[in-house]
Image (cartoon, rainbow, N blue to C red; front, side, top):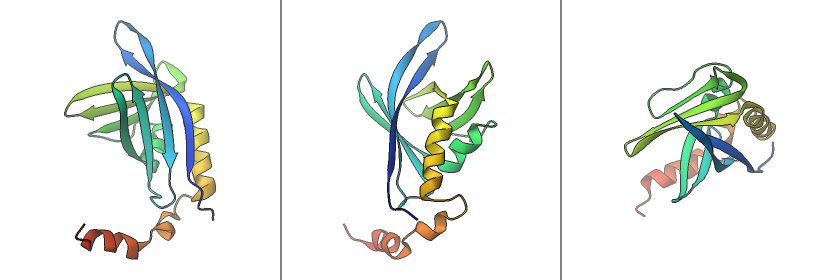
Length: 136
């Protein structure tokens, strides 16, 4: 087991009907201290926006439509080498496209740190409980 966090940089493409897809730089980040989650930090024209995904949701979305509500991940119907990420927030909606291979390689790196099914071994329940009862 390794305590190494993982960060990769990639380019998503914002899909808007009738307009050429706009590139959006993003960082995918994984911390073994939060083993079920993957953070994606999108660099937009107005700053940075972070979304937190379930690692399993991202993995499942490479193969089939996964998720509901705020985040949906699915293979692109017209391009098997891409995956679509739909983000829904009170302030707006976006569909982004990414290279499926890049997402898969990132997930493989996370599995090298925390194997699927072993996430619970990485949770420090004492620390999490202390956060819950902290008066800060």
